[in-house]
Image (cartoon, rainbow, N blue to C red):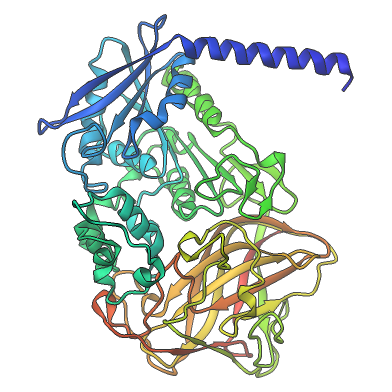
Length: 575
């Protein structure tokens, strides 16, 4: 590019930014109180450009303070929408009591119904937002409020149970830390500063008191580890396929919402009852965790400028298509799936997820019975075991659970991250089995949903098996790509857990979630197996006593990989 062209592009960019700034400056904000069906008033900000008399409306409902959405709301208003941001019930300026997710469906319906009656609303309403704010979209949508045309649920769930629990284990640091910040703190109470002790506390049913005060809704979540009737109001999986709405789903591989968000897209694209709705779904799947959507650097890995994405801009393009045009002319989605491949760091377009052109390939675990630590004899290859290889074993001590990521002075246990960080310090622990391939002579490319199929046993009534998929760089950096966990007692059912019989060998399947990556030439593929992923998941006391159990015991866990009891990783590899 010559200097004249570059200078011209800079001038154009400056002019565009200036125009946007001028538009934002013309946006005004008005705060009103919107009545819910029971008379509770919810504080609501309305952002409007003075030149816009009547327009489609974009709604966000948030428990995190409506003021924090100001810049995005102004951007939407500057683009010709009327942006509305509402504090959820019991939060900040809104009346009522806050119980997570308890009232969001009804309150969302009431807010949308109220919007549709305002003279400045043209009758076409969309919703946006991530995480809890994304869930308020699903909860409102299944109530089928009049005027709701489209939603853009970013990094969120349609089954809250399956977001909070995975394989029977609960995301303990996530929910306990969130409860400490979002529940009403009594006068004189203080949040614990001893998080490791708090998150190790038994019984699990008392963790709220260890946080600092009684939090009934946290206790309820922690004492219902089964997918039973307790979760019915936040179990929308079967309901969402009845919706007739275009939807844009955005999430990252390292996001703890990745499985739910991708499953929501798959469910809507493949199983929505309305055929047009199936053709109006989009998934954008990037290399991010929950706090880094649209960024290049995630954890200790820089995915390059190609990973940078303006996800508010992506939302805006979506809304322009389905709110500024009438439903008949909007058409089907041209590119249903945009996914980022880690390693080669490129974007791909696809018609579905999992994308076509990939087949499941097995990578088998091998050793001479001493795969403990990265210095052990564990290896990984494409050849099934032909001999009666000796099983590997490790001791899972609930008082010293394997950490989810290396603990450092700058990253204490409560700051454990889902993002990619060098796993080598953890692989020095004797309670971690490590299986590593030979360096690849040609790149290995895979995209889809990965899983582990293991033959295992334990000498206790319960035990956890954690599986990590790792890209070992030529310099030794061990980048975690995906992780899954299975609590042994939940191996067959989320509703009816059954204890393990000590010494009995079970075949278990562990979901590793959606993943797309390329293991480059000279890199190695690695699998780590251990008995905990603390504190991102609660450690297993190994007693099968459940959330009211007060004791723990050390488990000796085995992983088998012989001719009749194979253990392997199944990756969706490029044909």
